[in-house]
Length: 264
Image (cartoon, rainbow, N blue to C red; front, top):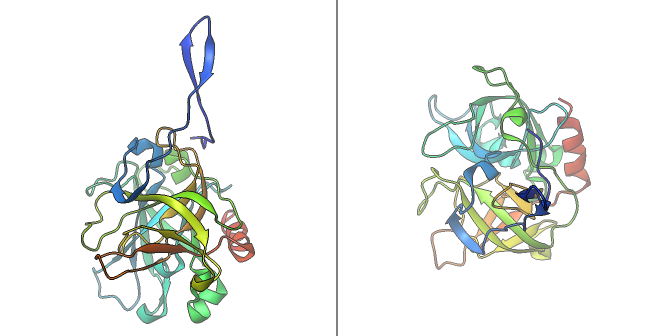
């Protein structure tokens, strides 16, 4: 499936031919249920992970996104979703479920084949490097690449400044991780938060980590470009979730990581 970038055309009559359809960005929100077509964001899903120091049968859950790659098997997520020193280091098992909703796996299940995390994250778990990419195996039932099934978002590198939509599956109260949620506000660089950017008024909780920040997201077509990932959050003390979420910058280190991963 090709990635849709920007406006699409609609045939209004045989005589008039094609006219552009206005892009439909999601309305401002803080943790609301996704309001658009589920198919538009089916490249976003849940990532279930096991680490060496977790008991057998117990898994952690994050969010992840299919990103455009030559291999057609690549996802982006947060580095702490795939490498945690307190849990024994690198994940020893993970599977990605695109388009997840209430336990349903409409587009298949894809096992982790190889994870790519920055050395700075593995050495000191530096929040400025809390981004990762992961190469997936093909679906064991259909044999298809995940990008061929659900499409992918292109990735842009550089500073994040302006309107973005953050997507994810927050699982700690008041959420349950079973439906895709979103925040749509204006992101900006925050020197106090490191080299990344913050998105204010976002009540995401644990489980949303690794979900994408999308610039120019269209609720109808799924058009847009990924510019960050949910990595952390801060609370203002007035609610159960953070008052803002943070994304590591997609800078030179993230670009180098992506270039390695997209050919794996």
